[in-house]
Length: 350
Image 1: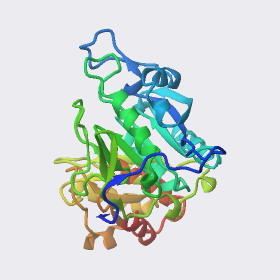
Image 2: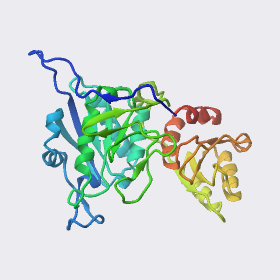
Image 3: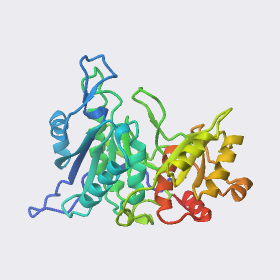
């Protein structure tokens, strides 16, 4: 849940004074990973089947106003559709962000990212980065060549947030369609409309209105500097699959995941994480093979509550994490313990 202890208009760009006594502009790194925000299409009305390829230099040239907000340098770490991001690239992004945050001449980071899996990268960073400096992810639902491209303003607003002192300590943030979302809560909830990112139950942390940053709430779940997860302790991330439950589901999906070497399975269960007969049998088989099973929900909203069956099956309730964010947390938690009680503690706290 959120706390309403930080409200009102946040101040921009407050940093140490220069030698001349004037406030120094914040130093922000723009880290590019690709996505629709870096894409072009053949026609101004073409909103799909576009090509990713624009670099951070091109993004900075397209929005020159960014340099009025901060001292900016760009770095192109990848240039892909976000659905192409695998565990190796996810770790590469996290390690580079972590290294940049450790530099004294970096005050914050803005990451451009495809929207399809933006929330997964944001939540992973929220769990492993050990800095209170602002990290803001921004994307676009329409390519830069579209009649009403949303990327330039999303990027500008992301810089407004990254240069805002009130953004410190709030974890990794997502800036889309004027709204400031917490990585823990925000999700992509529509396929193509600009207003695709929502935090239905918990709400947004704030918004940008008339060029001003407004924070109204703050996330209370553990994150960043308060997180027990560390990049230094991660060699590679374990294999965790997501299986979608439904009427007439088969056991073969669970057997395939176990045979493929999965160390964890997240079930997108029915309603309150309920398991079909096949899913229940799959959880039992997974337990016999030492594979952790987390019950999330396919419905998209609400808390999956603990069940008496969890003690019987060795399963874990995902709290309010959707299946793809539950996978992110389970990968990290399995690096510390396979014990169901410890895994449940992680899902309760993060």
